[in-house]
Amino acid sequence: MPSLPRIRTRRGGAPAGPPEVAARPRLAELSSDGLTWIHLESPTQEEAQLLARRFGWHPLDVEDVMSRRQRPKVDVYSDDAEGRGYLFAVLHFPVYDKAVGRLNAGELDVFLGPDYLVTLPAVDLRPVSLLFRRCSDSEELRHTLFTRGSGRLMYEVLDDLYDYCFPILDKIGFKLEQIDEAIGTASEGARELVQDIHRVKQEIISYRKIIKPQRPTLRQLEREVERFLPEDLELYFDDIVDASERIWDLLDNYKEVVEALEDTNESLISHQQNDILYVLTIFSVVMLPLTVLTGVFGSNVHFPGFGTTTGFYVSLALYVVVIAGMLGFFRWKRWL
Image (tube, rainbow, N blue to C red; front, side, top):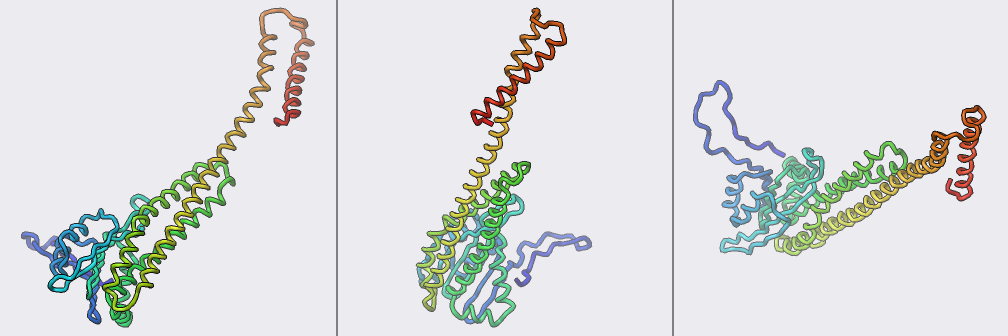
C-alpha cells in the first residue's frame, strides 16, 4: 500500500505558532481504464465529507461510516439527474483483537458506483490492503481488474476477504483436534483443558455472531450489484454466497464438536470425582465398625481380658476379621 500523507507536527527548534487548521486528507487512490479505487482506513469526518461531496453520497451513509456500529446491510440509490447512482454496503469480517484476545468484527464500508469503488475499513483488513498494494505495484494486474468494471473489482475484494476467513477456521479446527487428543490423557491438566475449551467456544460464538447477520446481506448484494456489472458475473457473486454458507456450515460443525468435547470432558471429570468418592466411601464404611468396637473397648467398664495382653491381641484380631469380612462381602457383591 503506498505511503499516505500524514499530518506533520512541530518539534523542538521549530518556531512557535498556532497549529495548522487543515491538513491534507489521506487519500490512497488508483485509476485505470476509466475506473477509480479509493482505499482509506478509518477515515476522519473531514475525509468522509470530502469523498461524499466528490461522489454525491447521502449524508446518512456518511453518518453510518463514522458510527462504526452498523449491522451488515446494503442500500441502493437510483441514478439522480447527474447519473450518480451508487450502492452502499456494510460488511463484517473476523479480525483477531490482541487487546482482548478474541475475534472481533472488522467493519468494511463499501461504496460502489458505475466508475468507482471506495473501500473504508474501520480496522486494518489485510486482504484488502494487500490487493490494493498489488494493484498499485502491478500495472498489468490493475488493468486486468479495472477493465472489467467496478462490480468485478468489488468481487475480487470480497473474494480475498472470504479466502482470508478459512485459515482462521482451520486454526479453530486444529485447536479442537488438540483438545480431543488431550481429553482424558492427563488429569492434572484438567483445569487448563477446561480453559482451552472455553476459549475455543468463545471464538466460535464470536465468529458466528459476525457471519450470521451477514448471510442475508450477501444474498441482497448478489441481486443489487448486477446493475454495476458490465458482464454477467452472477456466478461470481454466487461463489461469495457459497463461501459464506460453507463458513457457516463449518461453524455449525465446530459448535457441535466443541459442545460434545465439553460434555465429554465434564463426564470424565465427574467420573474421576465419582472414583474418588467411591474409594473414600469404602474407607468410611470399613472404618465405621472399627470405630464402634474401639468405642466399646474404650468404655470405662471391665470386660473379659481387660488389662491383659491377651485381650489386646484378641481385639486386634477382631479388627482384622471385621475388615476382612467386610472386604469379602464387598467383593462378593461386586462392589470392589
